[in-house]
Length: 299
Length: 286
Image (cartoon, rainbow over all chains, first blue to last red; front, top):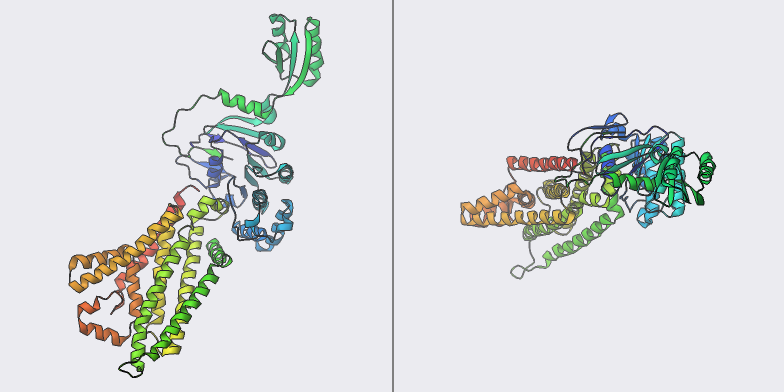
């Protein structure tokens, strides 16, 4: 997947959601940032260092989307191995491993072979490995894809806790409701380009309200644009960017114009709505004869 | 500990946990026990109705040991290829490499670490099995090969060459495909060596050239010749030399060790292939 002009800033203590349809280039972007794939052209930086820099990787945790650990090692041994590979001081290994096991709720299975773990447990272990050494930046690629609802809730709590200690979290996920729950900022990428980015409020355009109303002339319906961005399908009128406190005022205005109000739905545009809307606005790409990672990126 | 040594230790640990080392140990003990029993029976042979003399037993033992060594080297070559051919590709396919290579280590650390682990296994296995076999043969027949240490070095070098070839292929090909290619190369090298021996017997230059070329392309047969020489007693070498080139063309006979230039080529072949493997692995997407 060709990537171009990706610039993403993830401040410490914030979670950044990286969204996009399948094949948009999300995993490729993460691999480029970690030096697991080399750009065919261009350059990039992460934590102020060039892509793939080993000193930067020392400060990064990573949970891949599709991964496996040595099934013949125990969970404790896997985490110990990653402490060693991460270059953590030997004196910290025991505490780091124990803390990671407790955070991901695997302390009771610490001595069991990873080969006996369910996919969900392996994902928890991967998350624990990503947390070793208190990295400044954590890349989580679909961290909840194999988890049950309780596991997903736990992962959200873990992400909140690592944010609180000042770690930046870069979250790749298809589960938009999860992104909405944990991320402060998001970027939507399609065909290798960021098509929208910003805080969730920026992206979702604030609040909206839907009113099912009859008895208004077209000009009267259009006059409601004074309350916000209007979307009128003939039956439902959607007003975007309206402060919730002004909803009674809007209803009163409709009634004053002799309109008949059947339903009022305060409505917050979901990330999924916005995601689908943005993607539908994108022009269809021309086939790329030689897909390859490339471009500029930083984080 | 340097990351490459961490990976080497992990490779050895995997072999132990997966019971590879245990199985090799058991199979080696069985092989040594069976062959030792066979060697001990040489004293029961009757030569002209009389018990054999020590010279007969030791000379016969020396030639049988070459056959046993051939079998052992074949098993070592097969095992080394099968174990090492999925070493990189398997980790890439399973996603194991993703989690490891995101750590602050070089790809060369992973590749060289695995290579060192396999090399250690080859050397320990060859050294241990050869020492055990030679000790028991000495015990039952009184025969000790003339160059035991050199034998271990040459046979280990065959295993190391195959490990290096398999790992290089593994950076780009699946374990199955890379393993098949390495094994075909291994056997083709031996076939080429036999063709060269036939050429020597017939004094046919093209056939001798085929043998020489095969020893250069994959040095398995060339190094095996060194192992034969290490086991060959002086009395046999003198006898075969006096019998002419026809006898010297026996594929289980070597009168001289490989020349220093050829050994230098083998070292260059192994190190060059290893460098190619490191380069190939470093250039591919994980």
